[in-house]
Image (cartoon, rainbow, N blue to C red; front, top):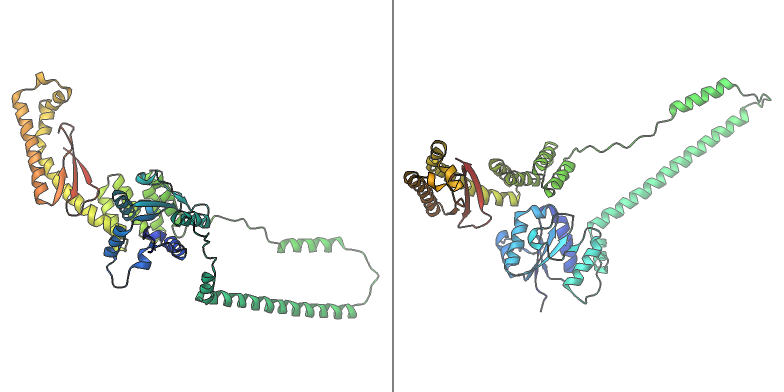
Length: 405
């Protein structure tokens, strides 16, 4: 009977590492599933991923700054924990470990990939023989038969040929120089004047100095591709400095950083700062460039956000009377202080009517829009409305909006 299938969870920017890890695990005898190796041609990608995640008794999740910012990876972790599946974190790069798996022991790959791989295989296959990535004879034979080996062999031949040709040219020039020197010494008359002209010596030293080149100092490499700015943005996100992260990601894109990951992560920063329109705009642009998480965020979050804003605007209109009471009769001030003796029955009735209008509009939106709407305020006297809305068809993280009245 084959070993249980393990689902490998990763984000697209860590694709190279994920494929290498999956290949090494498969070669060690571990039954691991990864989308790019195990989805049959012609199959629906999302269906196969969902089926593999559902059937797997456990998942291996690669943790990097990019993966902890991926909604898809976080969803896969949450699903595995909710279904009581085994979760094995693999720390590939230093990052902030998600809260839900922080108490789980991770396998450290940051210091040495080979050492981390040995520990992971030892955990998955107790008692198995030690395995080293790329050291077995099958891998060596595969490498010898590959096109990469051919290119390496051609490169070595070219380098050796260049060395031999260069050495032959140098030797030929040296022979010609020695021949000229020998002929000149034969024809030159011997003189007995052994004095040295100080002026000639000074001229030679001066000319030699002119030909010398000053030592070059290494200057920092310019950030022409935006990679440095992108990494600075990732550091700022991990530190919770979203404003700086936005500036760094913007600088990276201005320097022709091509990956849509920068747009997506900038959208996440805007969302954390409650700049909802900017967040949705970046999600849409990253989705247009083929970013999977950007497409998911735009379709789930921004459509829900649009409905939430419409509901909040309707409630703002219904709450106008509360603002008038606050300004004209100090009703809310007395209510919040608990000075009930200053409240008259007419003000109380008007306030209750306003509350009922708000709740009626929420109930109507809950029934007609296909969204679950929640209004967590216990009083409208704060001057601010908070709306929490979540799709009934595709539940996920609630969208929260705030409107002043």
